[in-house]
Image (cartoon, rainbow, N blue to C red; front, side, top):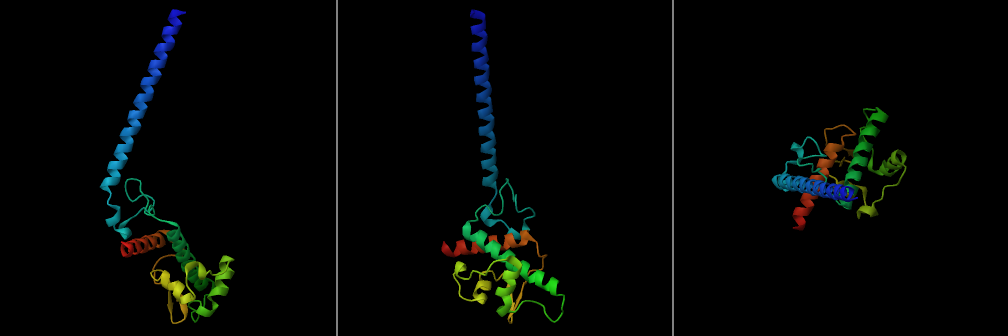
Length: 174
């Protein structure tokens, strides 16, 4: 009995040592991650110089500081950008380069199965809505267009535009 009790005690001590070693390893890894994050100057990061928006360094995503309103603006950018591209592709008519302002609610509903929610963005007119994302969508005359030279499904460019807008908004608030 004494021998088995001694073995159990030794086993418990070994387990305790292993747990302590694991905790030390985890603490070192956390400290290393914090050091890497400290080295990453996120606020002065060149947004368009980033290749991987999910890891801009130290396993930090470009969208780490996004809040609800940033995701809403990202969604708006994407939907209007996609709408401009899809309409141009679907119509394939050189005389119809985009959607007229008056027809935008119809086509928005047709493509996305939902209505344009102007009040949700705090605006009364479609032109004002486009001004919220003027870096991605514009109205040339009364035709919806996009100044971006990217594919319709280029999430990275739209995400980078959203991050720039977030930084500008934060700069104005500070």
